[in-house]
Image (cartoon, rainbow, N blue to C red; front, side, top):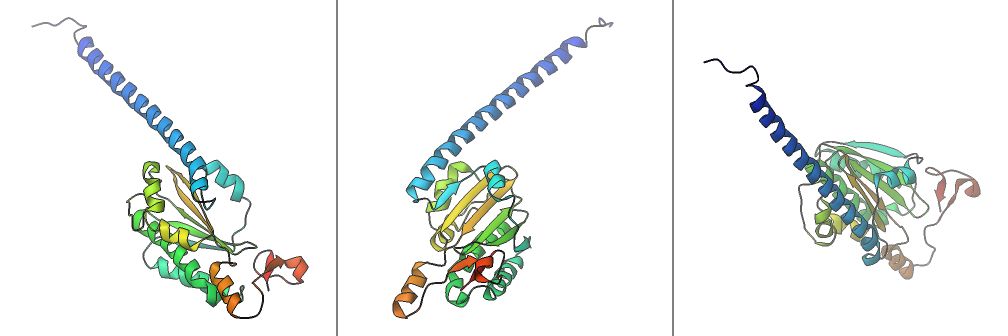
Length: 237
């Protein structure tokens, strides 16, 4: 049987038509998902600081870079495997023991919060790193991972439900981190998540100690003013 030379055109057109249809559905789904993501992001950016009194903030990758790209970390610690969790804790503990008087009295909650963040990097992502800084109020930690980002729809449960566990980036331990830090900033995208943990050494623990004994709170002043440096730009007294 001899078929017309154009016979092959019809099935090819059908296949191309189907592929175009599927591509259109995929593009539309992507647009819908991006729109939903932007809506959730806008809602959480407004609501989280209000209900946490400014202690939890959701920031964009652009805001993260603008705020911190110019900062030079005191330490950079790579995180890939389970053994890195105690290594990060020990490295930070030994480092700040030389910078902060009475560090042993205030270190436990700070190191606990940091360990929770590092644990989740190891458990739920291919790896990441910890950047360590020293501000006038206390240590600041950036825990960055190379995961696929957090599911924003599940963010309230992650932050506020004790013991909540999720397979996505940094999915557990948020309540512990929030309990032992002054402020937590979350930056998440498909390229990974960065968690900024700010501590404040004028904590209830320190105030309780000061109430029991005479003395003054830990203070931090610029190195130039103090006459000698300690850490990056500050010295503790």
